[in-house]
Image (cartoon, rainbow, N blue to C red; front, top):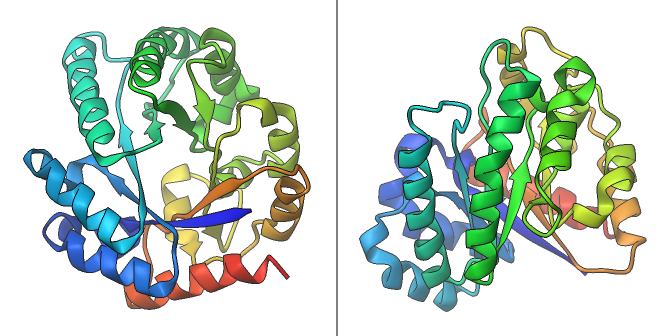
Amino acid sequence: MVKIACQTIVFGNPTIKDNLEKYAETVKKTGYDGIEIGIRHFYQEKAEHYRELFEKLGLQPFIHLGGDFTDKDSVKAQLDNVMNTIKFSKKLGVPCLFMSGSFREGKSLENYIYEAESYRVIGKACNDEGMKLCYHNHDWEFFNNGEGMKALLDNVPPELMKLVPDVGWLEQAGVPSVQFLKDTIDRVEALHFKEFKKLNVTPRANATAEITELGNGLVPFREIYDYITSLGRDWWITAEQDQTSLKPEEAVRINYEYIKSLEK
């Protein structure tokens, strides 16, 4: 069975924190089973309020956060913040913590190996609270023949870090998404569906401008969907659209209906 979540980033980052209740209601009304929200969009002192909200709506919450764990001067402070996020996530009943790394020009193999140390710590803390750490890729982990992703996979044990592949960013990096899923399927916990009108866009900063509604671009979602549903297990798929030229509510509807259409 496939369940579908909506990443609230589509509503526009500046507005999410103070309109979360309204957006959650929109997500549920559209038909979604879950909602994914960046940790910065919560008032963390209101954990019980959010838990009650999601339970009332029947939405499974997921939390996404990022960090620059190559910055040795700030790693301790960042890890402290992540530990607070894990405690907050547990109060909401979050099963998976989705985490993104950071891009920096010239990021080296040594940077990734150092970064992996933090993911081992975070993964252990998630496991201790009954959650799973899931790494969310962009394209930069696949620069230099994918040495960054390989370093993370080699240096963080599978029991401490699963994957939530963003198949759009895989394709943007020139990595065939279905093959990547086949190669790493034992670690894949969930998926992010992101759509691009153009692929292999350089410089990478310009790629974000090519993000569009699901089904309106070049990412092979049918092939991806058919593969994962052939495996005989349940899946969460998050529709993640960083920006839209439409009203966000319309983009949310289009993305949901597109994923549902793949069932046929």
